[in-house]
Amino acid sequence: MKKKTGNLSLPGRLLSPIKVFLEKELVLLKRRKKQLKKNDPFFAENRANENSFEEDLDEQIGHFDNEVKAKFLSKEIVQFRTALTRMKIGKYGICEKCGKMIDTDRLAVQPEATMCIKCSKKSEE
Ligand SMILES: [Zn+2]
Figure 1: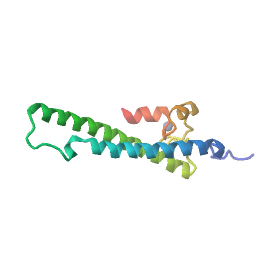
Figure 2: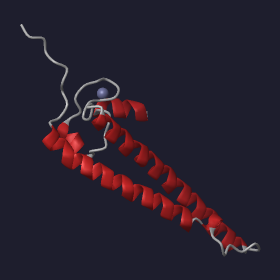
Figure 3: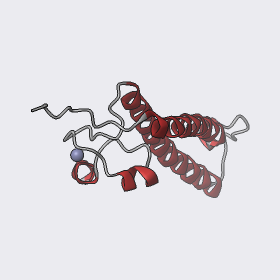
Figure 4: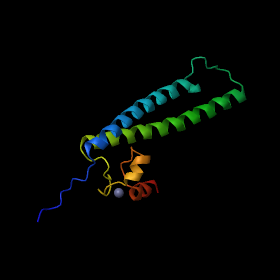
């Protein structure tokens, strides 16, 4: 009897639109991150040295807000890159942790997912 092949990857005709989507999103994410840096009050060219307390507070909040967003974007960028890399090596749609097929419903909503729901929940804990 033929041994079951481990080839669980999705067919190319399904992969190519996903690849296009991931690449497009990656460009957008990078652009947003760049924009974020520009908007950071800490890096603003016209930043006053003698701010009032309120202005200082505004800057702090704006900076903090930007930092949080930038962190989130960085995470997203890594996620999209990983998904694209996995596609390159023919492992797209296969969970990084347990090696099982990721639910296609999950991939439809989150094409950049590289872990199945179970493992991703575990890694977030
Ligand atoms: Zn898994």
